[in-house]
Length: 55
Image 1 (cartoon, rainbow, N blue to C red):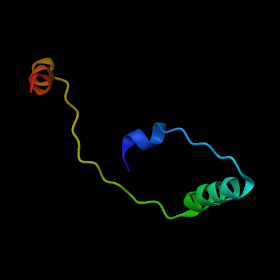
Image 2 (cartoon, rainbow, N blue to C red; image 1 turned 135 degrees about the vertical axis):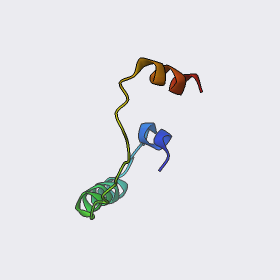
Image 3 (cartoon, rainbow, N blue to C red; image 1 turned 90 degrees about the horizontal axis):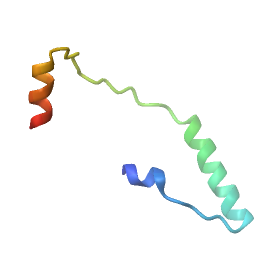
């Protein structure tokens, strides 16, 4: 999902659309969550950080 979609405005003008939207939100809350593994390492060295952000 694109990050910009999190900031989109939505307009709901009728009861049926509101109920559908709420059901979708509730269903997504119940859906199994994916476990995401992120490989990372801590960098404390100022020179290494400087080089990383100059790229």
